[in-house]
Length: 334
Image 1 (cartoon, rainbow, N blue to C red):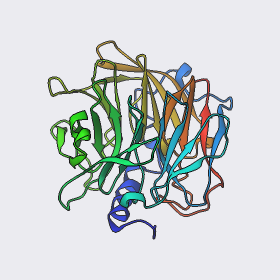
Image 2: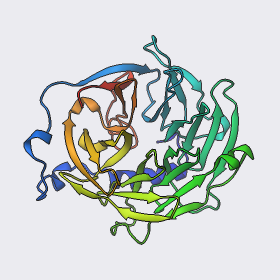
Image 3: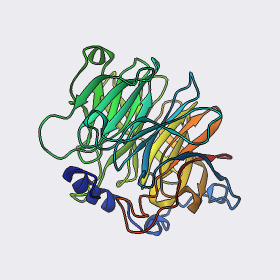
Image 4: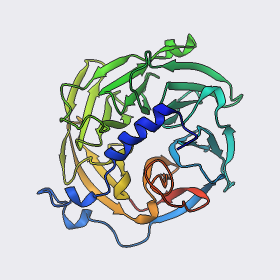
């Protein structure tokens, strides 16, 4: 990956270890899902939007519910793309390298219409979607390893961000955004609850917030889902039935339903959370190679839009040639 900084190259090695090429390794577990949750044979995946460029390798996606626009980010150079209703080909919204950004991982649009873009090597930048101007920037202090990955916006406007090589979740408050930036410091420390990992394995990845302000984040290596309560600081492992969070990447939560992409498995699973958020069971699962190593998803206007990263086709996870153009898929029926 010559276009990426040394720190990205190092963490890409960890990413390779965290996304094994052997989904069958956990397929024989005793909690194999019942027949109605097993992979569906009918095609369900179609290309919705094209991302221009032959080295895009997209990673993140966000929807602006006010306008219907979707934003997607390139892992390899930090370009951020925008699609608008009625247009199939995305435009470049923020060019590669803008504001010193080397990669674009998690993306979210908050209630004020601001776009949050994480750079795994540094932190997160908040943009005005009208002017494209950066409003605030937050960075992890020091020189130690970090991989700022995904983020969720809570009902009070605070953002919570996962770090995939440190077992922590950072927080940025609206007051901090108004001040224009600062340091990203851990708000939750999960080191005492995560299952033991290999030193180079990824841990926390996708994260979402429910209407009560509770957070849910997946440990993609340990296979667990955790509920975090910002009001009390409590951390609790969610009881899962019918499956696990192995290879879990992006998450999407709506009305008690949790959608999960399992990247190297080319799978999307749908879960039902209990009202208290202490347990979840699999309702449906879709496995399809047409997902092209999905990294995250967003539900917008009744459709799931899924990032098809193709990381294993000449990208950060393997040799080969990607299918051009890179696309965002529309997935229906799950």
